[in-house]
Length: 135
Ligand code: T46
Image 1 (cartoon, helix red, strand yellow):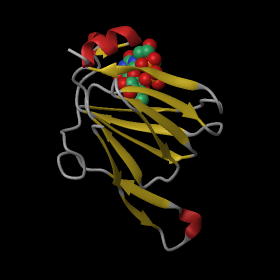
Image 2 (cartoon, protein in one colour; image 1 turned 180 degrees about the vertical axis):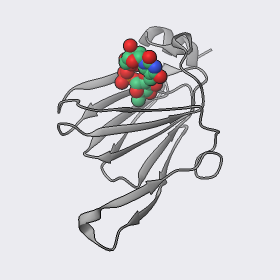
Image 3 (cartoon, protein in one colour; image 1 turned 60 degrees about the horizontal axis):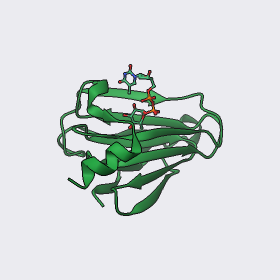
Image 4 (cartoon, helix red, strand yellow; image 1 turned 90 degrees about the horizontal axis):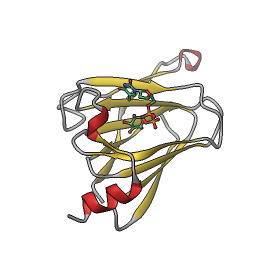
């Protein structure tokens, strides 16, 4: 399936009370130039988001705080990746149906995207997605 789990450079402060800093550079750590970033926050545990695919948009997803399960579907197979560490990122190519499950309250999802927001670039109907990937 067309995704990659990557290790994001993370610098922990020598004083653990000061925490860490995680870095992703466009066209270096990730295979595209970043046009947009967003984050999803204040979501309660066991709630699901997503239920769509993108036609053009590449994305880096990572979870700096908490745990989020990402279920990916390419129209043939379903695979699940758990983001549970700030330094664990996932690069998603276009054409993957995704469902995201918040495993704990207030987990944060950070996303870097290759495209500006365009609602017409989303496929939000599952049958339309299957037709799209099988043609
Ligand atoms: C994705 C997953 C991981 C905007 O106005 N601009 C934006 O750039 C985005 C991303 C969203 N929105 C609006 C559209 C909706 O009214 O924010 C609202 C929530 O978006 P959505 O229902 O698409 O949220 P999720 O969590 O289902 O999906 C989002 C991204 O849209 C999507 O690209 O892969 O996060």
